[in-house]
Image (cartoon, rainbow, N blue to C red):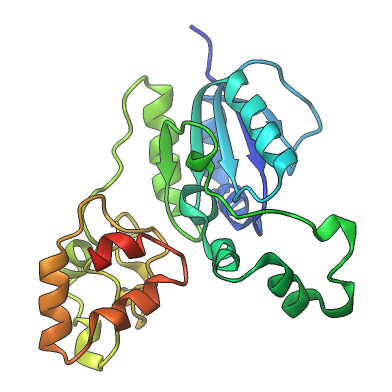
Length: 249
């Protein structure tokens, strides 16, 4: 069997996760020994037909984007959502909290009526087509991306953490950010970043989204211990629109 044919596509995003792929530097050359890049707007002009792995960055905001995504899904054996915008809508999804016309007026002012600004509700990739694998983060962790590509190339099911950032934070022996009177989303956020933000003096922003089954009672206990409320926690989660309903539950 030849090397897996891999293509990278982007929708509504800053393309920062794709830049992270470029930041692999020499390791990117090592990955190319294992897979065959066949389509990637940022790096090549070639177009491919059928592909083994489609990597999709960005949220879906327009009807034509939904159609394009469905065509990509049909071409690919495996579809991977890359980064927060693709996995759960990311910061873009904040727009859904107000009427579209109001969001356009706030951002674009007198130009709000321009045809190219017309779009719909922001959706994560899995809200449009089935997704086989998700790589979380804003931006993604390049070491995690490299590992997952290697596992796919070897025919193995990639490991994606499903425990909270607090686990990684404790392993790094960090002082809990709540001790600094901050609201940290580590208790409910999916690990895999090696507690990057808390380890560098900042609370967890929740960019990787919530674990599948967050320990809500434990999160409530943390809030009570430090004099915070559930509303405080949910307010922070809104930045990446990452599972507010599961925390309220």
